[in-house]
Amino acid sequence: MKKILFAFGVSSLLAGTASAQSSVTLYGIVTGNVTYSNNAQTAATSASGKPKGGAQVAQLDGGSSGLSSSRWGLTGAEDLGGGLKAIFKLESGFSVNSGALGQGGTEFGRQAWVGFSADKYGTFTLGRQADTSVEFISPLLAGWYWGNLAIHPADYDNLNFTHRINNTVKYLSDSFGGFRFGALYSLGGVAGNVTQNQFWSTGLSYTGGGFAFAASIINARNPNSSLYGTNANASATGNNLGSAGSATAAESNPAIAGFASAHTQQTVSVATTYTAGGAIFGAAYSNTQFRGLGSNASLNTLNYSGSTTLSTVSASLRYQATPYLRFGTSFDYTQGGSVGSKGNAKYEQFNLGSAYSLSKATELYLTGAFQHASGTDSLGRPAVAAIGYLTPSATDKQVAVSAGLKHLF
Image (cartoon, rainbow, N blue to C red; front, top):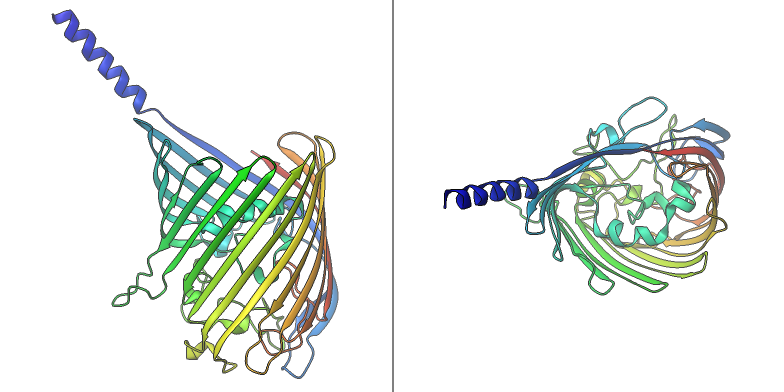
C-alpha cells in the first residue's frame, strides 16, 4: 500500500511539473533604410498663403518609412494545465539610427499585456494593445509589400498600427470553421465620467480556400487623448492629431490636424483578398467620422462644429515571383474632411514595393510612392501631399523612394 501511495505521489508531482512548463522568447526586427523625398516643407503660412519649402531630402530614418520599424520584444507562456496558459508580451520600438525609444519615448510602447489563453476558447488579455482593426483588417492589407510609405493620410484609420490603446481589456477567439472574432474595451479612467476617454472596438474575419474577408469598427471618445494621446510624450491639453506649423516649422498631419476638438471618432473598415497561385488580389474600404467638432473649445482654433468624414478605397496586387522575390502595387483614393462650406480634400496615391530574401531572416527592399492632393484640408488650406510619416510637401505633389535592409531575430 505504501508503495502504491508513493508511486501516486511521484506521478502527481511530475504531472504538476509538466503542467507548469513555461517558455520565454526574445524576438525582434532591426531595420534601416535610406529615403528620398521631394517638395518637403520648411515652414507653413496662413490659410491664404502657401507653405514654404520645396526641398529635396535624403535621410537615414531608421525604418520609419521602410517596410517596418525596428523593435524588440519578449513573449512568454506558462502551461497551467487543462489547455489553459498564462501569456504575456512586452514589445519596445526603437530607432536603429540613435537607439532612441520609439512611440514617443514609451518604454514598451508597441505592446505591453498579460492574460490567459485556452484551447478552443481564445485569449483574454489586459494592457496596452492593438485594436481589432489592426488584428483583422491590417493583415489583409499586407503593408510588408510596400511599407510605411503607403499609409492612408496621417493613418487616420490606424490601419498601419500607428496608435496603441492603453488600459484595455481584450478578447480574441480561436478559429471556428475559418471564422474569428474579437472585441476590445479601454476604460477612460476619468473620475465621475465612465465614458470620457473610453475606447472600444470589435471585429471579425473569415479565411477559406483562397478567399479572406475582415471587418472592424472602432469608437474613441475624446480621440485627441484616447487614440492619439497614448504615448509618453503626448500632450494632456494640446493637439495630438497634428500641427498647423509656423513660420519656422512645417505642418504635421494636415489631413486631420484641424479635427482635434472632436467628441468622438468612429472608423468602420472592411477588407478582402483572393489568392490565386502566387498572386494575391486585394480591396479595402475605411470610413472615419469625426463627430461633435468643437466639443473641446481650446483645441477648436478653426471654430468648427458638426461632423466630418474621411474615407479611403484601396486596391492592390501582390505577387510572389520566386521563393526569394516578391513585389506588389496598390492604389489608394481618399476624400473627405468637409466642414461647413469648406470643400473636401482628395488624396490619390500610387505605391510600389519589392523585396528580395537573402535568407529566412534577412531581406533587401525597395519601396516607392507618389501622391497628388487637391481640395481643402482639415486646416482650411489648399491640401498638400503628405506621404507616410515624412514631412508634408510644399505643393500638391510628392514622390518618395525608400531602400533598406531588414533582419529578424
